[in-house]
Length: 496
Image 1 (cartoon, rainbow, N blue to C red):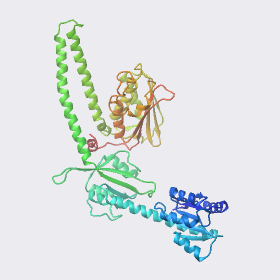
Image 2 (cartoon, helix red, strand yellow; image 1 turned 30 degrees about the horizontal axis):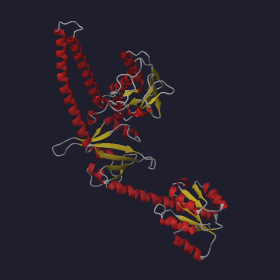
Image 3 (cartoon, one colour; image 1 turned 90 degrees about the vertical axis):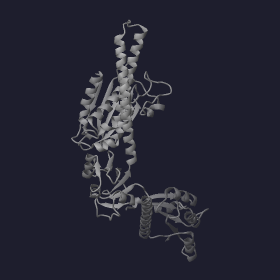
Image 4 (cartoon, helix red, strand yellow; image 1 turned 180 degrees about the vertical axis):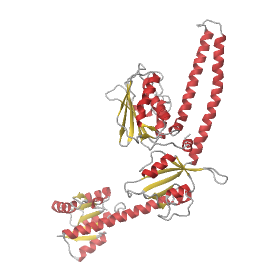
């Protein structure tokens, strides 16, 4: 702990004394706060919660004794150490200061070395006391938590585990330093996805770039158990220490699986009668002898067109529902492959005006999703640009770069603008503005919602904004880099 961690509040009505104390302690690295009156001192004490108050006794209006009593009576400031700076040497004055709640006294004129030593000792003791209080509160919260919490060192040794963590790891208690987290996991769980776990073990990442799971398959004795693992290394911890949280997500996984089974069954139910409907409409059209402009022929053609549109909507909905499954269904895609993906998509869509700008890439610039998932996300973004362009022929620029340890993919077009009041709602499936702003179709459909689903599943971020000065819209996705490698189908299954 250094002096820069400590804050000292100086309360004195004499400018010269304030300047002297500030200069004396400021060079030591303390954060100094100055108050000219007792009232001001009380306000600053409540606001800043300093590690020490240096309080002058003889002040007009509210003297140091009254200030000290108010500090002690206020629950927000009662624990702050107070050192009275006084020229009074008589026994009665000191007793009065003690009765007011002062912790120590410094006599004027004071010895500079002695003052520094006292301030250093008191501030450090107060900081340690504060840390102990915080630690005891933290431990109290963890003891009652339903989530498992562990603290591990750089070698994976478990330094602390709350009761829930011991329950999940099937240990009555965990003596600090006797077990590694990996040893405890290997005896009971499957790690999903395997590649992400290996990356954490190898690189000791600060945070997870993708969800991690511990899976205990169902047996004749035990039901299946899914634990989501989150890791974090707060700045206040030692650089080698990491917090780990184990959260039971079995119910969520079960719900996802049930929903996926329902979606699959629903798709089968809809596709069969739809196929029959379209087949019958084709047969009916082929059997009619009327002219092309007859009412019956027109009705049959509209029936066939409606069936085809319904089929397309169903397929698009099913693609949206499956999108998260594609993220980790195959080895990770490399950042350098984006240019070829964009080129293929633009040719397929008949958009020759798509321009790609790429920077240098590194060997390890792998993205946490499959090529198929990335193609789907980029295709929806480009299609969205065409969908809302007045002439359906946008000029599109795709910029691919590496920023702050993650990949940034920016797609800009020269189409219409999005009203500010709805710009953050365009990620919602089938979002429909109250007043149609775009050309038909007015709703957003599933395009950007599918992009959001894929990017979120990959542990990334997304945003949209109007281009300035415009015209057009910019859509950007940010994805973390991960080591290359296949991922497990179990983790994919959890997100169905």
